[in-house]
Every structure is written in structure tokens, then in C-alpha cells.
Length: 305
Image (cartoon, rainbow, N blue to C red; front, side, top):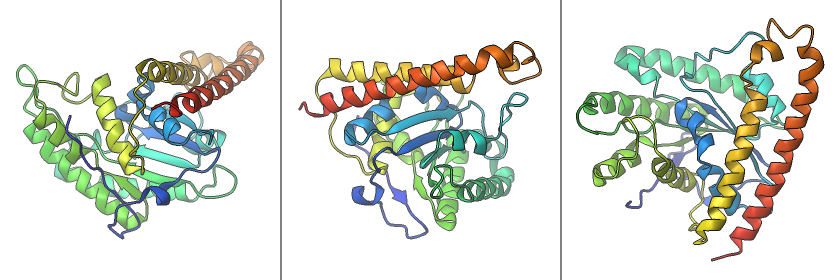
């Protein structure tokens, strides 16, 4: 696929972020929230692999708290699940990537003002917190991807792209007004899709394949100031991504358990309060151990050409 430049805008300045302006600190904790675009990243591991390889030795952690169909103003959760703020505080989030706009765009022009109002409210909620106990989180707003034209029996992508472009523009303007970073995925992915019609990036026009996530990761990486080429060691890269995917699986079991009604819901009494806290502690230890394995694998791989 042809190289595509992603641009991040800060605080209304309209200037691209340089790599040194978006440096990650030692031990930085990065969290993804948002819709299906974020949620499905957990199954491929490309973004975290990119971050870990670009920052070897910094012991970064990434947690995926994406939830399919989430919107800036609508995040349904199970009973007693806990607020977004409580979960971000538990992860001690330093940097948060917010992936929104795709679901909201179905409301068209009529829903645009509501979207901008809800987006501003969410950003201000997050900016008012210190999840890491020291500073407000660094926020990066990420636009939706373009809708891919796949031909029949799939619907025409053109009307959807009109709305997605409209909402992407609103996100860019809102990010500038709110003083947060913005990464445009819509325009680069639309270009890539048009250049490579025989190599679909999505399974259905909307949801990315593994190759699609790899391409989108490169756009995100450029937006985050990362441009170093990936190592040529395919086996080493697969091993790193395998560890990341397994860590993500363990984290999902911890953060979003399938049997939530028995973990923290209406059926947690009497046995859940006895059996699940130790289970959660075990998952925490396993996740922490996988983080260490990821750091070691990334450090080894980053030393190879």
C-alpha cells in the first residue's frame, strides 16, 4: 500500500506534532476507548507492537477498553459495572485514544450538533480527572475510517462517506477548540481503499481485516510521531503480537467478564464476593507478567534490523 501521511492537530494551532512533542514517558499507561474500531484492535496487536518497538525499555502498557457501538454520549454497561472514570483510574491512564464518530455519523447532518456537544462534554469530563494521580490525561481524538466500496451485495459507500467526512471535519474542529490532539483516519484510508480496490481493507466495508488494521496502525503511528520501519524479523514480530493478543485476552476477562452478573451484578452474593476477588487478582498477576514478556520481546526485536 502507498505511504499515507497522518496529521495530528493540537490546541487549535493546526501544526503537525513532531515526534519529540509526542514522546512517551517511562512507564506510560496508554488506554484505548471508543467503538468497534478500538474494540477489535485487541485481536491483532499491531498498534501496541508499534508502540513497544518504538519505545523499547520504556515499559509502556496499553489497555484496550473499546466497546463495540460505544458513542461519545452513549456507553451502555452492565449493572454495577462502574463508571468510565473509575476504570480509567484503575488503569492509571496517562494517554487516552478516543475512537468515535462512526456510529454517530448515521444520524447525519441532523445529529451533528448533538455529537459535538456530547464530544465536548466527554472531553471535559476526562480533562477534569487525574487518573494517574498526578496530571490530567493526554487525549488523542481518532476519527473513523472511510467506508470501503466493495460492490454488490454490499451497499454503496458514497453516501456513508459523505457523512463520515462530515463527522471527521467536526472532530477536527472540536479537537482544535478543546485543545486536544487529533488523528484523521478517514482521508488516508479512503485514499488507500481507492488505490487498492483488489485488496480489501475491511470484511464488510466498515470493519477492518488484519491487513486493514496493520495499515491503519501505520497511520496512527505516524500521527503519534513514530516513523521507524518495523523489524524484518517476521517470526519475532509474530511472537510479540502473540504475547500482546494474549495479554489483551486476559485483560478482557478481567475488565469485561462474561459472567458480570455474578462478578459484580445482582448475583454476586453470596459466592461471587468470595470467589471472584481472588480470581481477579490472579488475572492481574497474569496480565502484569505478560507485560514483562512483551517488554522483553520488544527489546530483543528492536535490536534487530
